[in-house]
Image (cartoon, rainbow, N blue to C red):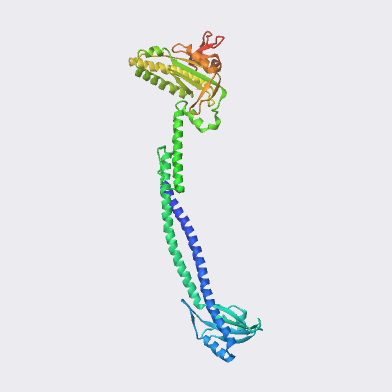
Length: 458
């Protein structure tokens, strides 16, 4: 399909350039024919005007009989040019009253109308006859500016018709040659444009298939070269965007990341107060555990643990805020609004504990010591937004709700999930939970109520 479009593009470009070439060649040819024809007509007219001038002087210098004999001899003369001969058709002299005093026509050239009837001097004066042009001169009386005679010479332009035909043929041939050369040039230009366009098309196809390593060498300095540069900048932007997107997805769920990138105007990354649910978890007795294993084993344990927990967090649309050594901080309902965010957090916590049980079973089978986590959950108002500097910023949540969640997590024993009263009030119909005695929390004047979360109701 793409190859067909490229061939069509080449054809279209060729047709466009050929059309422009044809228009230019046709215009030049027509203008050339017009001016060359005008040159020939002016040349013939100047020659006959010279003859008329001779007649004009002869009238004044010769007697009537002598002038008549001399004028008769003019018909036997041919006035030659480079490409044609001019023949005098008639000589007419009129007095100052516009009366014909002398008229002589060439006996070798017939002057007649369409029926073959000879045309009189009066008809010649009143109308235009095909293939006949006329020049005039005035004989002035000596001492005055009055016209004594008007000399009128008619000459045949039949010979000029063949010249006009030659002019047209010659210019048409030249125009055809230039049109052929222009067409060949048009194809070359269209092809030279189509090669980089073909390259761009193939590169775009690779990008559409996900290959963001595509790069085009800029080989031109014209508009095509500009397109090549813009394409490379576009791919670079896509690559950067994909990197940001893939990095972002490490901290929030795939669905949330794509929704944020797709609907930037629907979220607020500046500070805003909103209700969120926060989850803290950490490994119980982690410091003592690391004293009995090597640093490599410690990292293996954390990577195995984090890999399992993060999949569950993302499954329930939690936003991973940070790793705290052996701990994890997650929050829901920011930056995207989530319905039932408290229930999602509780369900996530229950599944995290169940997943850890399976992981410990596997570790025990491999001769490794099991480990356990505690999880604290709280719901409340917090400030959500971007914090940091121009060099580095991160989106997070801060406030008393976050601090209280951390304190509740500190109260957990291994395998426990403790939820605050605010969270319990939102999920009480959907969970299995047992109230515990009020807990003294650092930073709180009065003890707070917490519930031991055991399971999620079906």
